[in-house]
Length: 311
Image (cartoon, rainbow, N blue to C red):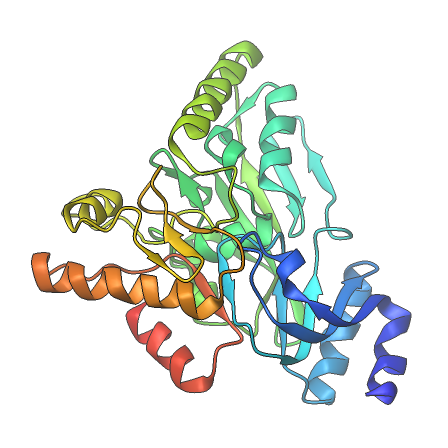
């Protein structure tokens, strides 16, 4: 392990045996061997090369939202981009170039300050550009692909721009989910001019609504399930009588039933069992396959295969 540390530490800040609890919005997760903040894009590229040379598994993380990290020890590396790959630039024609570690909430605020519309929906999404592009994050019937032009990607050792049309974007889906060895470096978005006050009022009204309807005062990962065509996921869960159901310290929120909250010391398995309970009951009663939005990380191979089969 010391030899590995000597190889990677020139390229960023490295924490050893770091708990993932403090790096996920669920406040759930086990210990990881290396938690790395790369110094810059060049350092990131070299870090990825070293980890592959040493056959060390790794995950790239933004702000730790929308994921369920297992409580077991992860013998690998977590690379966090939100402290270094967070530059963004607005062009006069309304184009926004933003690195993968940028906060979606901050970008929405900056776009508003520039009197540019298109990211209002993201003003309440506690994720990063990279994670948002990976899952096509969205809210209020809008998503990132609506304003996306292209994505800067590290693939097969080369840095290339990939056009949106080539990335299979759909509801909570992108081609990146099939190519997890690709690394998202940045996104290019086309925004449109709009009165700043109009943008601000829309964002404020949505913020007020979120405060009233979502459990933002408790650790959670956002919406747990995608909305099927038949009816919203929260309504299905309510029809099943599962609002408030608890396993261990994980509970289906009483405030919004498509959220699972950590009431104290919830384990990843507690959350997983709640998710499975909802999926099984929804299938039995309505014949609906509820697909989770939450990404599973550091689960064993069999469980990972089961999650992929449901995605």
